[in-house]
Image 1 (cartoon, rainbow, N blue to C red):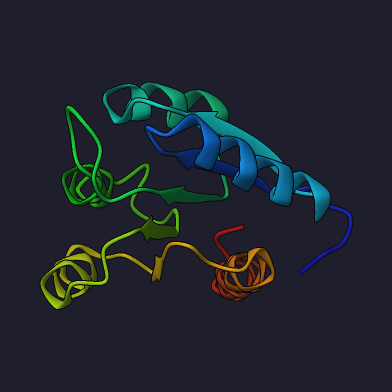
Image 2: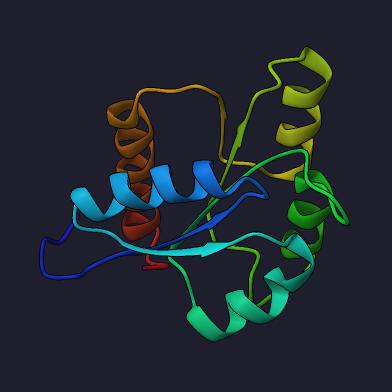
Amino acid sequence: MTDLKKYKVLVIDDEILIREVVKAALQHFDFEAVTLESPSLADTVIRKTKPDLIVMDLYMPELNGLQLLRKLKADPELEKIPVIIFTGSGERVDVLSGQQAGVYEYITKPVDHNVLIARIRKLLRLKERQGDA
């Protein structure tokens, strides 16, 4: 990863505490963090902020993470943004559904922030190598 670029990560979670903790960890590791509590606004916010990566919860009101992921992957402008599902559910059906919908990583809560940051960096390096950064 190029050290000159400050990567932007969008965090979508309906729980304010989760959003703020993840945002603080991202900022500590020199990422630009944007947070969103409602997945129904995601399309507009993603187009406006142009994040390099998205971390989102699986279970949220209005629109769950899998529905949002499928919507993003169906949009040619947004489909290449790497998505990490960050959730309290480790159920096999949820993991498989996420993989089928196009999730890049599936992380269960709680997770060590160093692990989350390592996964984010890994996906951003992959994105750079593919020429989409």
